[in-house]
Length: 90
Length: 86
Length: 135
Image 1 (cartoon, rainbow over the protein chains, first blue to last red):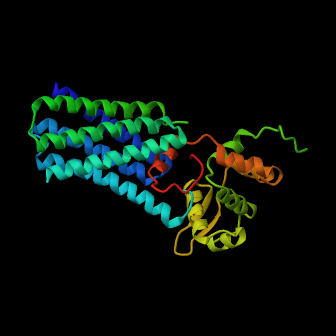
Image 2 (cartoon, chains in turn red, brown, cyan; image 1 turned 90 degrees about the horizontal axis):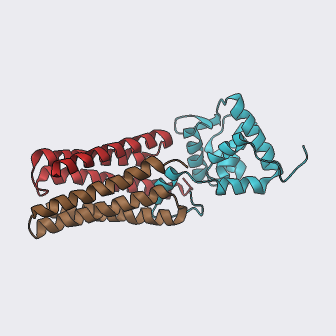
Image 3 (cartoon, each protein chain N blue to C red; image 1 turned 120 degrees about the horizontal axis):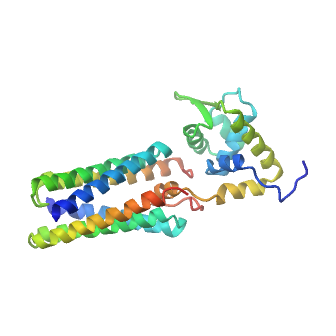
């Protein structure tokens, strides 16, 4: 059951990453690129979880997830720094 | 260390969910609704993982957690597929 | 052509407006299109349109990304009107005319066009919302 769930989740995250990548190509907005990388990392993390059968307490697993969410934090920070610096509507 | 990471992840997800819910209330773009729901689910997931680590690993909850993950991702995918074009 | 308030805006022009976020971008595009061969710096444009030079630079970079303007890099960036297809050039000309004749209509369109979900997604992550539109 877990393997099925993990497999389906990995696939969803990978597809989501592809969508975000496509959005980046369409809009040239860095945020989408970083979201794409983030969801790709989530997918990788879930793959690692499926392979290792370890608990989430293991560094390999939580470091990957950490990387994924740090990317999102960076994406948000980047979006806000750009907005503040230019004082414009973009 | 692991606990801190999952708390950070939960906070980040919650922030994303909040920002997207707010954005949805402004723009009514449904993609934001689905994304917000996805991040809400991921927040819940990260919180439960944290509780699992702090209390004790319970194998039963693993399945539930992964169901939440899958449901969250499914909502996001639905939004990406159907609601990403005007 | 008489100024008929019921005259429909052509789809080309609507598509063009859809690629513009603000009146500043609109005016920058129209300004540079007026003299296609002339090179502008952000400061010159800012002086001409009486806007903040930093804001002008940012808007012109956006227009550059969208290939409405062409820019040569370097510290003092030079911008000029991009080499448009005849269709796009005609649309910009029409937009110029419409902006002169029906300014309020055009400005309203800039702000009330159906917003792009992707733009809304990205904008949702701006913690301080500066703009009043929903885009």
